[in-house]
Image (cartoon, rainbow, N blue to C red):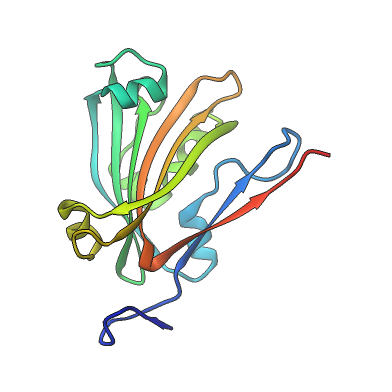
Length: 188
């Protein structure tokens, strides 16, 4: 058990998010890790609460990531991921609307990354950026942090085998409870 800056507030070990960065198309490393399933395997007792599941017009940023005209309807999913009863990440995904119909109850019980495969959508490659910034007031409230607390950020666009974008994710993770573990593979 580790402690935060507040001695009255013990926390469990940080969530480790392995990010396999495959540089070889023949590598067996997974493109889309399945965070909820990895947390289960690590005994972290993950929970997912869907905060938003609706169709919205694509902003310029989302439209560019998904190669769609701005204003095209996309499905936005916002989920709060927790472990041991505490929030650890706020996950926001945008998907082209016709690709996948997602029920809130199924998202909470199954997880987003299991659902595309069952619908025949297979992400093949992705581009992901990792960064850090301070929490907004809204993010701090959801993540049980103080406004301005350090957050780790990820932005990812996933593509199918044809190169079509199938997902754009923009996530924030509590830096006090999360770390990224990178594995780099070199082509033979």
